[in-house]
Image 1: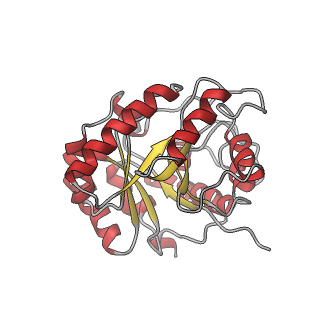
Image 2 (image 1 turned 180 degrees about the horizontal axis):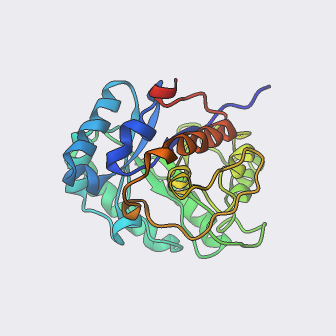
Image 3 (image 1 turned 90 degrees about the vertical axis):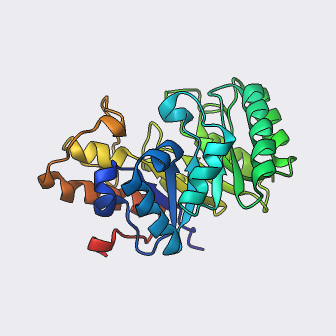
Length: 272
């Protein structure tokens, strides 16, 4: 049986949303809450994508800002783009702190509204903590989605808390996947799109987001279907600066390579 595809949400600077981020058909977008609240063009674009049928997932801001926005701002951002899901605050590599932050934010958001699916990000310092954190979230009635962060640095292949493809295989092999929960991958890790060739075998993984195809393409670096994937030091997406138009085709090819690896048939409308 052919493996189900994983939806790919491309992250790009606000000036290039129509060029690289728009989807045909519109499926899933990961959206930065702080940019929704401060950038009218960004806000308008994703509200339009929601009206075209996309699932809009509002991220809490911690990766970009170093701290999560408060519940009131997350709800305001989600409503502004007609989002269906909010990613709750998370603390890198700290399971207990992430649980505490999520439990508190979920209570605050639910006090304001029950219109959004709530997504938690699974963090832990070691595998025992990872399992405890996972058990807490799948047992919590407020959790509608779980996101697994990218594997950023070389780590032992058997570590659930450091190697994402090991974690997803463990969940599948041990019958721990919950049907009521949406599972997402946050970001492309150290093997980039090549990880998706393996992850797409798990039909329960819904989506992945990433800026790598845009950033690398803007730097003149092609992502190859069969690899190898080697990512040099790169700027953050908000620091990328103007992208020369002669790099647009390379960026679009990079995006196509990622979607091919993920088994996604979504295209950029201009290239559909």
